[in-house]
Amino acid sequence: MDGIIRIDKVVAEFDAWLDPTLFPFPKMRVKVLQRSSNDFMAISNLRRRNAVTREPEGTVGLGSSVTESLDDLFKRFVSDVKENAPPGGLVEDDFEWSACEDF
Image (cartoon, rainbow, N blue to C red; front, side, top):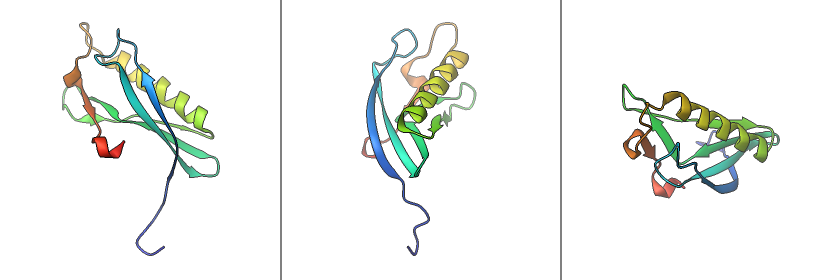
């Protein structure tokens, strides 16, 4: 199609309830996109801000199924939060939300 380079299909949406010892809020939303017949990408509406630059750093999950991409996202996201949390833990200002119309 002229002017369109790719169309991703949203195949699933989830509410993920977060561990209160790691996160300052109860949940985030996740979309899973199907990019081809066996290529899926999970993205959340939440990004952690870099402690130095304060720029948001996104994490995605990739896999050959909805479940694989979702599991990959959660593993990467939780690992990133644990690795970058200061001794007192992260606060709401350490994260940035996607615009509500994106989710």
